[in-house]
Length: 271
Image 1 (cartoon, rainbow, N blue to C red):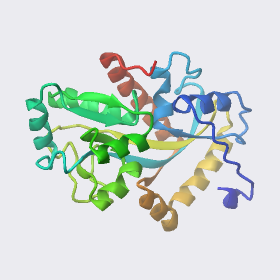
Image 2: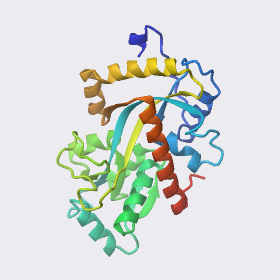
Image 3: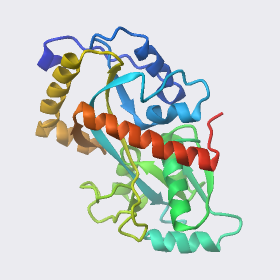
Image 4: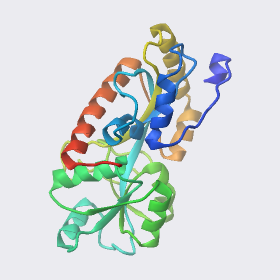
C-alpha cells in the first residue's frame, strides 16, 4: 500500500482485549483516511465478549476492504487419538467419554472456541473446553499430549500438520482449502450448512469520505491480485480475499449478528 500510494505507512501494533484497545484508538482518530485498522474476527466480536469494549463494530467504522480469509481446522494429537481420522470418528469417540473429552483453543471466546461450540450444538455431542492464553501454548500442549484436540486457525496449525505432529480432520469453511486439499469440510462430513471462517480486512473511522475509502479499496484490490502477495498469504496459512466496502459491511453485520447470538445462547464471556 505504501508503494502504490507513494505514502509512508506506519504499522502501530496495539495488542490487548482481542484488539479492542486498537479499535478504540481508531474510532477516536480523524476520519480522513490516514488512520486505518486491520480488523480480525476477534476484534469484530469483542463487544459481545467485553462489557467495556468501547466501540460498536457495526456503527463506529467505515468498511474499506476485506483482505484475507483465515481457515480454521480441527486437529487431533495422532498418538493420543490414533483412530480419530475424521469428524464421524471424533464424535463417536467423544460420545463414549466420561468425563467429557477435552479440547482447546487460543482462549475463552476465541473464534476456535465459538466454532467448536457451534459444531457441538449442530452435531449433538459434548466436549469440555480448556482455554489457553494464545494459540502457541494451546498448539504446544496439543502436540505434547496435555490436550488431545484443538480447533485452531491454519496459520498456527499448518506447520505441525505438515510435520505430522497434528492430524487435521475437518476444516470449518464451506469449501475445502487449497493448503489441505484432502481434508473434508465439516459440511461435507454431514453437518449441513456449517460455516466458520475467520477473516480480516481494513476499516477506517466512521465518516471517512467515500472517495477516500474507494481509493484505498481500489489499491487493496490491485495488491491482492498480485500472485506474489497471494502466495505469501497462502504460505502463512491465509487466503487472499478482496471484498469491496459494501460487501465487507454486509459480512460484518452477518458475522456480528450470528456469532453474537451463539455467544448469548451459550453464556460465553471473557470476563
